[in-house]
Image 1 (cartoon, helix red, strand yellow):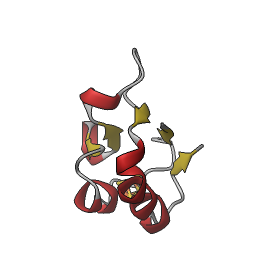
Image 2 (tube, protein in one colour; image 1 turned 30 degrees about the horizontal axis):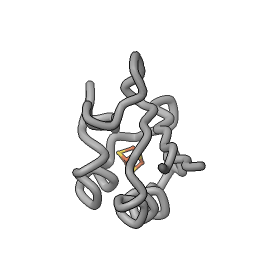
Image 3 (cartoon, helix red, strand yellow; image 1 turned 60 degrees about the vertical axis):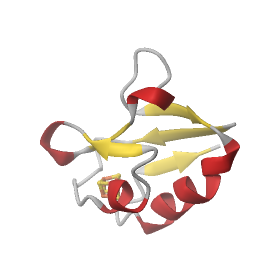
Image 4 (spheres, rainbow, N blue to C red; image 1 turned 90 degrees about the horizontal axis):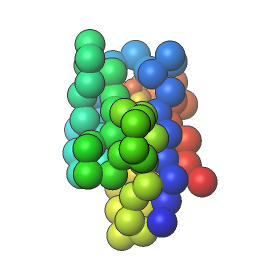
Amino acid sequence: MVKVKVNQDTCIACGVCYSLCPQVFEAGEGGKSQIVAQYRVSGSLTEGNVDESLKDCVESAKNSCPTFSITTE
Ligand code: SF4
């Protein structure tokens, strides 16, 4: 399991993460990134628990985010 978080305070809605990894990220309000419903931690749009099989997808989005708004553990 990979824990992933999006910081919408620093997200600039560039769309890179949800272009690269739409299985996990989607456009929320104003184009800011959020986690798709399937993987959200309950009650949060910006925190998710993602299956290990999507780790590479998440990591590529994280590494491509221009504002370092995606974190994993
Ligand atoms: S790549 Fe980063 S800045 Fe761009 S939409 Fe995703 S979280 Fe926001």
